[in-house]
Length: 118
Image (tube, rainbow, N blue to C red; front, side, top):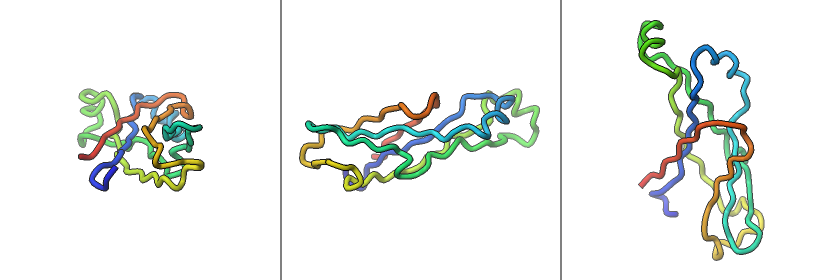
């Protein structure tokens, strides 16, 4: 991957405002990153490279009743960049690297939005 490309991630909260108070103490979103190679693939959690922030709570209008009427969600996705240095992955042979796999096995349920910069 050259410097003009990257992997971006964001979370988005599908819960309505009445559940916002319950969500304040919710755990952070985390998942494993597996680098595919012929030998045993090295795996590290995203949290090793940084915290994936929770969605940003916001008001879309100045009037609360308008937000409640016009918008289902009270949050906006927050896109973040993560740099994953190959040297951080143990037992990796970069010449045999042939893929990347995201294993959503650490957080029970979230919506993840991925984007690739071109």
